[in-house]
Length: 246
Image (cartoon, rainbow, N blue to C red; front, side, top):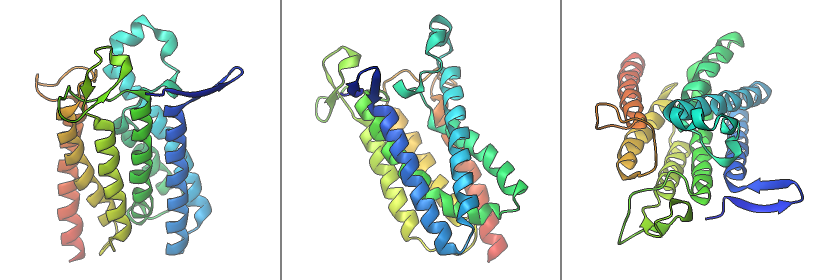
């Protein structure tokens, strides 16, 4: 893998940080296009996109640190090195949503309509971000004798399932689906995103073999447990919004 793309003097370009940045830029461009098409003030949407991204980075890092507490107690100086990897998407989603609801309420934006505008870009950003995980060599899968990639940092010189690429492909398909889907009511795209992503993430987690913190109930990873919660939330919102707008 290639965690470091190149060095220019004291500056190192990390593949993980590059793809996260590309994901953010792609999400911002998509959100701006969709906001303009919907006739909304693109300035507020862009501000919301930027600040939500920053809140998401904080949330993603906090959840990662919580799942790897033992490691960061031993190496506290690594807490801030997010460019080397170590973000949990669900932590970012929670952090971003908390800021999102505060911002939309403060600026009197329709939260459901705005969510539909932003969420396809989120899926595209995820797809690019997972490519960063692949080049970094983190978030790898179980050993595989049929379909796999050797990740040098693991040290076993054996092929592992590239779960990063699987999730990248899944979120790219979700992005395409959401871009083509014409919502019948406000909030439908956001709900459909959760209904697509949360179950997909739940299943992909069974293929993961990297350290992901403690298993809950000795069966589920933290991300799988959160996936179940978001799936239940999505079903509730789907039924509620559909009945409300029928």
